Length: 353
Ligand code: NAD
Image (cartoon, rainbow, N blue to C red; front, top):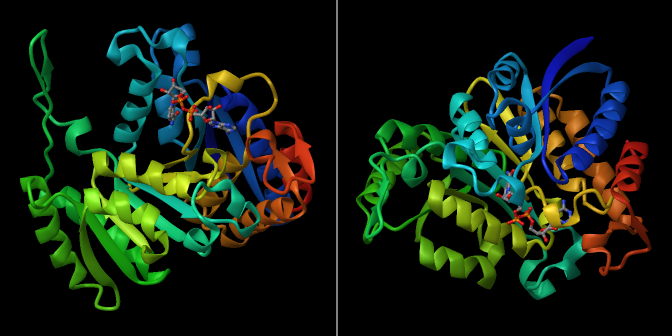
C-alpha cells in the first residue's frame, strides 16, 4: 500500500473548520483507493505567532520539507494586522512558498453548471468556462530588492531572470498540452522591460511545444476580456502581481470564492490551498464553504501523489453534491434544495466518494 505524509496547516479563522472537512474526504478517498495518508498537523500564521512569536515556526517548515505535500487552510485576521510586516501571518505564507520553491501557482477557474447563477455575468457568457491561471509566485515585485518607504516616497522593484520565466513557462505549456493547447501570456510589454523579457523567453520555450498556440495580451485588455468573453481562454500564463489580480478576477467569473482551489508547485513539495482567505467575519459559525479546500486536496492527489483516480473521485463527488442541491450559505440562493453547515457539506461529499 502506498503511504504518503501530509503536512496539514489549518491556520486561522475558518481554516480549522474547512481543513477538518477536507480530512474527512481524504480519509474516505484513501480508504476507497487503498493508500494511506499520515497527517502531521502544524501551526502557521496568527495561530503560530501566538504560540511561537513567529508566523512560520522552524518546525512547521521542517515538517513541510519532510512531507509529500502541504495541505493548507488559510491565515490572517485583525488580531495580527498591526504587527510588524515580518511577524504578520501573510509573511509566513510568502516565506513557506519561497522556502519550498513553490514558484508556480495553478488556479483552475471552472464554471459548474449547477452554480451558473452564482456568477454576476450572464449565463451565456460564462457557460463552459474552463481556465487555468498559471501565476509566477516567488519573484517579481513582491520580492524584488531594493524596496523602501519613507514619509515622502516609496518604491518597489519588479525583477525577473530569464530562468525564472523559463521554468514557469514550461509548466504552463505542459498544462496546456493536457487541455485545449492554448497559452495566453499576459503582460505589459508596451511599458515594462520585465514584460519584454517574458515575451522573449516564452517565445523560445514555445518552440518546444509546436502543438500549443501561444498568444500575448496586455494585462489591461486581459482584465476586460475575462469578463467580456472568458471562454476564449485556456491557460493564462502571467507574472506574480498581474496573476494575483487576474486569478481573483477569473475566480469571480465562476461565482463563489468558496469553491476555488489552488496548487503552488515547482519545488520538492507543493502547497495545496483554497484561494480565499481566513474569512474572520464568519469564523466559528459553521457556515464556511469547505469545497475550495476539498478541491485543493483533489489537486494535491493529482499533482503530488499521482493518485489521479482518487482526485477525480473527489471532483465527481463535489459535482454530485451540488447537482443534488446541497449548498453552503454562501451559494445558497442558487437552486439550493438544502442549506448545509460546513460539517454537513464535508460529510455529504465524503459520503459520495
Ligand atoms: P477572505 O477571502 O477571507 O474573505 C472575503 C469574503 O469571502 C468574506 O466575506 C468571507 O466571509 C467570504 N468567504 C471567504 N471564504 C469563504 C468560504 N470558504 N465560505 C464562505 N464564505 C467565504 O478575504 P479577506 O476578508 O480580504 O481577508 C481576511 C483575512 O484573510 C485577512 O487577514 C487576509 O490577509 C487573509 N487572507 C489570507 C489568504 C491565505 O491564507 N491564502 C488569502 C487571502 C486573504
